[in-house]
Length: 383
Image (cartoon, rainbow, N blue to C red):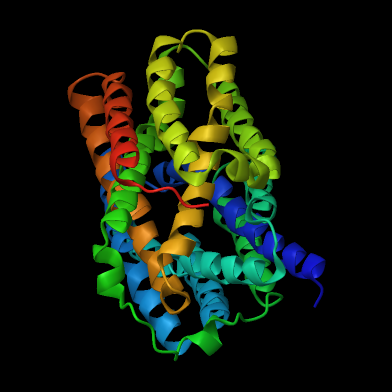
């Protein structure tokens, strides 16, 4: 298979995976509310899913690294998560729906860490540009966010699982088009470093702490940004536009990411990403009543997430040996998105209710500032 064809297939999987994320993020809470969930029940369901996100990636990573069959695991998990997800429309009652969500989520958590490992190994062998392949995920996110809105306005929110199921099916098909990697051949090789030794290194601990701070600080944005805008008199249409502006900026940055990272260096770029994140949440509070200014703030998503994610992938790929790539990706996802995201979501929700809606963003800025200090003090350069 030619490198161009391989990169297209990798990009296709990213497109459908992040299209499902784009279908969930703005619309899943309204769907669950229509199915009878209270705000408290929503919080419990998301918290339980967060626990799975903290634990399951490592379980799947261990299985993938020991079998050497990363893409086969992605294929199986794609099909299983699709089948279990489509039980949700038939589930009756809050707790049955929650059980169906947690069931599909067990397999969903296998997908991204293992596919990232597959993608990075393929791109290393073909000298491909990760950012230019990954940008198709951002395209999928924007297409889903903007495309599903009119359909749901026309049909109502209840058909959402079936529409998401179409994206799930596209993701499953795309996984069968991607070949297995050489990680399978390397899995049995002896390595001078085991997983425990790799994780105990100061640079790895520092990177994971910085990533945890980054994604903990993003929790108010992910879960409350639309509500925050509504509190300041902005409609959902404006909120949707601001979400789209952020991801389009991310896409543009991904196009040039390899040149930027080669010029600046991963450490400086990660430092810039965390520092800009802290500034972003401060400006979000201060400029909440000024839409034109918020558009400019949203453009910073290119740095605060796009540059951050590219640097995180750069470091994880280099800090973990080939035979540990699956578990390295899993540990990163569990620390940043599982632990960091879950603590951030629970904390932001409590602070929103018991202090004031602006407070979670102020605290998020402080957490991102701590992450900036960790990168500056402990994360080494890596070109």
